[in-house]
Image (cartoon, rainbow, N blue to C red):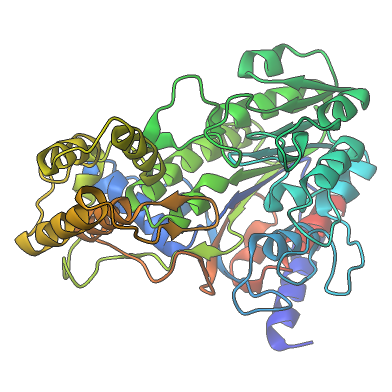
Amino acid sequence: MNIRNLIASLCILAASVSTAAPKYVFYFIGDGMGMGQIMAAHTYNRVALGNNSGLLMNQFPYAGILTTYSASSTVTDSAAAGTALATGHKTQNGMLGMDADSVAVTSIAKTLHDKGWGVALVTSVAPDDATPGAFYAHVPYRGMYYEIGRQAADCGYEFIAGSTWRGANDKNNQPTDLLPYISSKGVDLVTSIPAAKASESRRVFLYSDKPFNNSNIGFTIDSIPGALSLPDMTDAAIEHMKKVSPDKFFMMVEGGNIDHAGHGNDGATVATEMINFNQALAKAYDFYLQHPDETVIIVTADHETGGLSIGNGHVGYTSHTEYIPYQRMSKDMFSLQGAELLKNGTPSWDEIKQFTAQRTGLWSHIPISEKQETKLKELYDKTITNHSEQPNEKTLYASYSALASEIFRVLNTNQGFGWTTGGHSGNPVPVFAIGQGMEQFATMLDNTAIAPALLKLSLQ
């Protein structure tokens, strides 16, 4: 045993001796949330919104650092990281709920559920995505959505909420029997917050029948009418657990859209998703205030996405998060609306500038240099006026035209964001915790340490 694990074990032992077991465990996971994402939200909150109190997680009494590498790579994917956070076992990238030798491993949620705890899983992305899936599924490949969905139906958990079940349709977009199968397991499938709260069923799965896409409920910055939101889903989950398992429950809440925006290198959307995640956390904190001696909350991330920094070579020793409110939509929504614009003919350069200004604030409120505008105009001439094919920017979840991609590169640069990748980084991620016995997390740990420690604390 190395010295770091020895110290962690001693801390866990000391906590178990002196602390009563909690009855309510909240496990918040900001997908793709590193310190860059936290500081983007913190700076936006302070500079643009005038709130100097900081994010709620930053005010928790205990803070630590988590390493995130997988069994197969120094840079993890969400499946391997989710498995480590949920079960305490390393695995290979792409594998879910199995160790590196393809042996199924048990999550903290499953263990607690078997011992009579209620379980709720909430996410702003698909409920069969890697992070929520790690708490109930065992598959060799994270893309086995139909199989993951059936395992969700079989797991017995009381509440699962997210975007849409991707296994509900096959590769030809034809319906499968997944949703009927879920219903056959005594699950009330609902598509709205009021319906979730009104349900008399012990098991409720809340999902979006009109998601932004097949991967998430929609970005906060887009203000999509009728879209589900992470704070509302979290509130519905707490209310349901108070109804069906009031004595003890475990809840995992994932801010999955932080990661999606990070893959697109969209700084303002990351910042607003972080604020949304913070609002969901506030729902759990309100519960904690009512049950401070019986509740623990831990906040961490599966990995960091994008290699995000505050400040870059263009803005120097400053940032301009005060420009964020002028960005009215995500890079994904901008690209969708841009594609619709092009269907109506070939817009002039002035029309492109006006379209961009109304949606991002470039030109109207955010200064743009002559050099930047010249490059954008040249790309416009090449790709739109002359219809020259340019390779699209493709990320894990989206694809953007060359011009949209460059517009957002300029926007991010002028807002003061810096990015190193469109994928994940190997950077460590933070841990924040509150509640009795949670001081054990105020150190440097590996992502495999969280679940066993929480489980030991809960079952002592």
